[in-house]
Image (cartoon, rainbow, N blue to C red; front, side, top):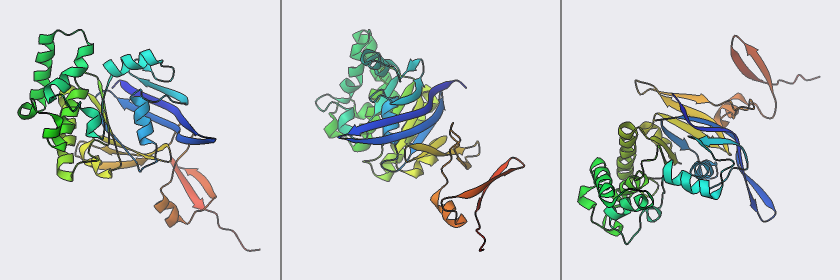
Length: 283
């Protein structure tokens, strides 16, 4: 498969007054075309910063990041606008950011197409196709305030797909929804991924999303630390991630059980690496 997203040694540093906050610390990540992927982490893990960089809303401080044919490290403002218009669709957690409140759902979906060279009839045909694809016929002429939160997020997916971007990004799309409605929205994203062959990347704090994606990336302290991959039988296999610098983050529960603190012996044998607690002998 061809790589759609590639991040190598990605850093993002924010300056707050005289302080520097490192949000991303050498992130390595490859996403293939047509993948359905989640990025999971607690608040402050760096997941939202990463997706904002992939959406072209933030610029990385260092490292390499490409999406399709776009190099996002050296992208200028004009190129960023073109990138967001053609390469990527974005769904926000806050439904108010996704939909214009005084336009009905049909007009909201049509709005991004206005910047294209499509004729009015072609726009109408495309909007009707998306509405049918996502089963939005009953709400097409309603204002956002007159539909449910789940319907608003599904309509937001339609808006994000208006210009047929190969990449769909979603930042906590189920964060303001109940569990049942959230599952409905996630299944619509799987439907888009399967039928449109769109690469879908979902950022969330909820680990249960592993049940709705093919691969789930775990982030902590600005780094990618683990992956959960579903095989053909839907069995989930969890792996730790070794970054390009040879770094590994060991889960705290494993460190606690091992009773390893600041130092350990490192051994390699038979394709296995082991860490052993240092036992100090009394003199």
